Length: 383
Image (cartoon, rainbow, N blue to C red; front, side):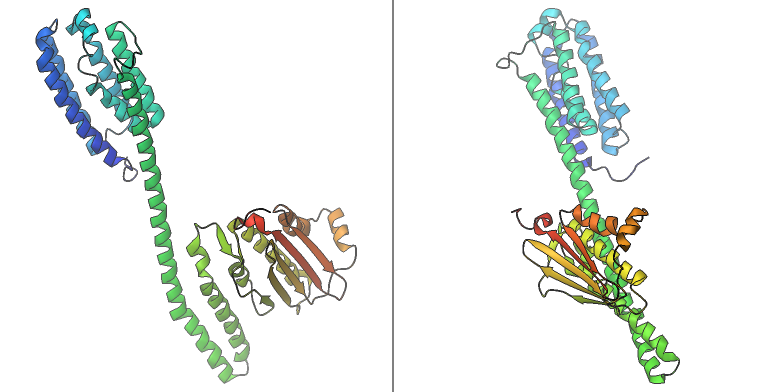
């Protein structure tokens, strides 16, 4: 079953052009030497097999159904058998003085096919098989490259074509990923437009009419207003996903998503670029701190997030005006096996080479001071 477009199809087509040229060369060689063969008639019969098999391979590879391991292995076997027929159609003296029938150029076709199918290793291995057969039918082995460099050419073909096939596959995969990313971004932009033109406008209308009517509808208007602001923040931060392949990201954009009626943000006016992975971990630690505020600081507690770009490091503080944490409470939780804070915040930042410190007391709220070194961002050299 075809699993999609063949990434090496252009190379397979080019290989069949080489096959045609090698067949023409083999025909010229056959006409020139046939009268010198021990069995000329058998030579022409075997040459007919050569042409028929070459045509079958060309059709199979061009149409695609032959681009399978079994077909390529069959081609290797057929070529080896035709080369081995030298022992029948030619005399030992002729075989020693001439290139192997039906020419080593034509015998390079399975090397190319194997390189395309199996990669550089398969191409080089097939080249070795072809040359081993060549030496076997000649009854001698020589590495006199000044006299005959066929083995180097054969191995080079297998290696070069195999590497080209690998490059074609990788390039095709990159193009597919780029196309998928482009399609996803287009769909996101379409949805953003629909949200902006539809949902946000409806929420704005609910807010306006709710305040105009007043009374019981005011609470509904406040809820709609909060959702409207959340949607606008989501739309304004959509550029994060549009830059998914870059290593650096503006930490402000991640943190801005966490802003709400009870979470205030104080962010620098210039981008705070961090490596995407480092920024995601720091943002997650901030999210854990805000979760603790919602869960433990009290129903009316507010949180304040301050981001500072310190040059060699980046610092984020998360402070709340809640009930605070009594002295010794965190140590007691750790002894009881509840390690949520140390794992989710302290451990997360320590794994980045950073730190996290908690300042708290009963009735004084809590404050987390988080810091990560800037060299982890990949935007500056480590110093």
